[in-house]
Image (cartoon, rainbow, N blue to C red; front, side):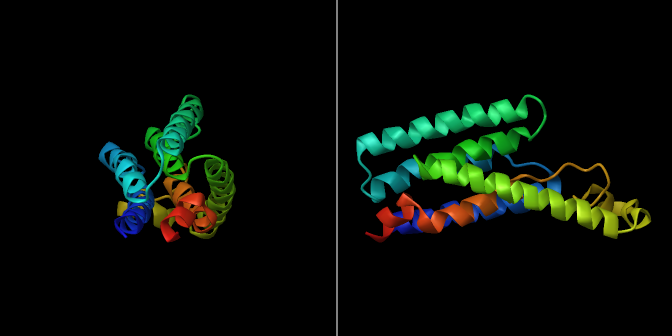
Length: 167
């Protein structure tokens, strides 16, 4: 039962990361660390074996390398790179591949929506106050934490992690 609650904590942390990224274009290190450090507790409470746990760690490390490769040319932010790794740690193999693919699709949807909204909202209304610091401002970065959370939410229902929690 505690493992199921920890999966809910994972979902809450992901939602919080998406909201934080949308509001400030940052995902704090403490939040990514909380996501990653909660996983070993969930794995223990869910009765995950050492081999499977090790595979999850390897997938998380591989995802960190992928995230860093995306960060290096400036395609995503540093917080996004760490969020990829922290979330992939929870999914393990092969669900992390579905998470990455679905996150990439959601990133495309996010980019399309931002482009559309940026064209619909008059630029003059974006130049004053807090609105100039939102994702709708021309030239603002895309808060990719939203796409990562959406990809995780899309992947979670069919994941081995949830099957383990319900079994």
